[in-house]
Length: 197
Length: 197
DNA sequence: AATCGGTTAGTCGGATCCGACTATACGGAT
DNA sequence: ATCCGTATAGTCGGATCCGACTAACCGATT
Image 1 (cartoon, rainbow over the protein chains, first blue to last red):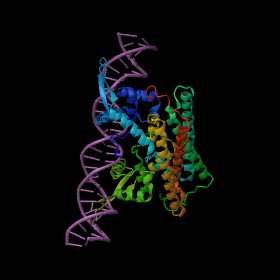
Image 2 (cartoon, rainbow over the protein chains, first blue to last red; image 1 turned 90 degrees about the horizontal axis):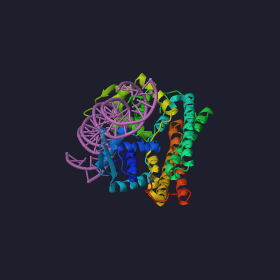
Image 3 (tube, protein in one colour; image 1 turned 180 degrees about the horizontal axis):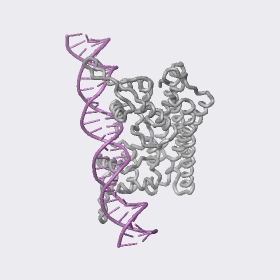
Image 4 (tube, chains in turn green, orange, purple, blue; image 1 turned 180 degrees about the vertical axis):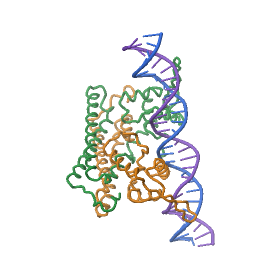
């Protein structure tokens, strides 16, 4: 299992789009945003053009034509290659099959929760809980709007279901931990030395 | 809420350590690894030295002495500044309080789960489930070893509890989704056109 | 006494990432 | 007619990230 030559997931999104039809980068970005995929992929124009260039270098995609429309900047349209198609599927397969360690900011912060002291920690967790609740209702709403109307088969919003499930778990933990601080189940060590991590 | 000048969480780890005592970078890395914090922070020597340099630039830490020991490379020892101390606490506070959107690889992959077709998708999810189970038992074991022995107060392993909770939720979703594919609750659209994402 | 592997300590160049910017077109309000 | 905001399409320089490397020391083994 050799390290993949283009590793960032924006490349996966690009490959995914090009399975459907040829596109120029700007269209990729707007399409992804339209479909709400911008919560699964971090889409920034800068990165997008770099990523496309990288995919070309490794011949997973190739330019098919560059359209010159009036005096506007040229659009270069790309398609996927055969390698690109295979790579796409096997990449998805691998990402699903094999969990990789990641380093979310919150995990880092929780490592130093002690630094806040019990009151402030409980307060901060409480606020987070509120925010998470908001995010959850919003997400649920969006799913309902899209799937409920029968516009899209459920499979095409499955990442939303995953996201919601994880969000719910995070909320659970956050609330529980706040409560444990409040009711004295989770205690701070006596503040003799510095609170050494 | 101005964008933080040093944004990567390795800097948070560095600040955290320097709250305790002065250190040189190499010692920071080993200390973090000893404490198992290398699952909360991505520690690579290259990044570490860059991060320390950035912290110095912004005066959150400063060098206190450089020890020249025989013909070995010099060690430069750093301490936190007053700004560094404040920044540390307020940064932790903010990270706890405010959820930020992140883009885990798995989320990206799930967005294109369709590309695998039902059998392969179910299979891949099944394998992931197995791996997650392994990770969970391992993590649980490590927590038991460390906390159970009363070596460390619970607060100092709280990030482990968080990690486990989220892992469990991921496992749940993974298994459930695999089962829904297997029993036909989650179906693939007829493969007429390309399976358009 | 020469060699090997592991630990200590850090450097460096290339890859990646991304925010800020450029420049044209276009429909509607002033 | 002109101005303004928005959409279209992409470039570019600087910041960050990190794997691979250097280099000395130490203890055990051959």
